[in-house]
Length: 248
Image (cartoon, rainbow, N blue to C red; front, side, top):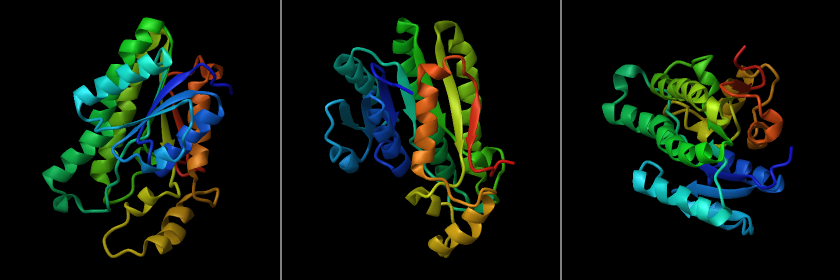
C-alpha cells in the first residue's frame, strides 16, 4: 500500500487518532500537511515530508490558506483525512444546551463541509483524489445520551455519500470510516459526569466490542491508509466499520 507521491491533508492531526494517521501516512511515503489547533505533538515528528499547520478549520480563510500552502509546498492535494472531532458526554436530551448542539455540529459536520469543499477544488483539477471522513460506529449502534454527537456523525456519513456521487465523474473518491470504541483520550469524554473513566473502558466500552478489545489508533490508521491508496481506486461512497464487531 504505497503512498509515495501522494500529498495528503489531515485534520485533527494532533490527537491520538490523527497523530497515528499522520505517522502511518509518512511511513507509506506520503507528503502530509497536518492541521490542528494544537500542534505540540506534531512538532516533535520533525519530518521532511511533513508540513505542520496550526489553525481553526472552521474559519474559511484559514482553510483556504492551509490548502493553498499544502498545494504550493507539495505540488498538489490529492488526499484529505478528516480526523478532527469532539465527543459528547452522555447527557439526557433535555439537559443539552443549544450551544452544545451547535458546537458538535460545527466541529463534526461543518468542518467537513469546509475542508471537503476546498479539497474538491484541487482534486477536480487533477482528476484524482481520495477523501476519508472519520465518523462513528454509534451511527449504526447508538448509545443512550449521545443523541447530538450521533446526529453530527450521521450527517458526516450522509454528506460523504452525497459527495462521493457528485465527485465520481472527476475520479475523486469519498469514503467514511466508522471506528468502534478506540483507546484514546476522547473515549473517556463520552462517559457521564461522575463516571470512573478507566473502569468504564473495561466494563462498558471494551465489553461492547464482540472481539473483546478496544480499538487502537493504529487500527484506524491502517484502514485510512488503504482507502487513500490506488489499490482502493474503485471504492467510493463506502462505509467501513473498523469496530471489532461493535456494529453487529
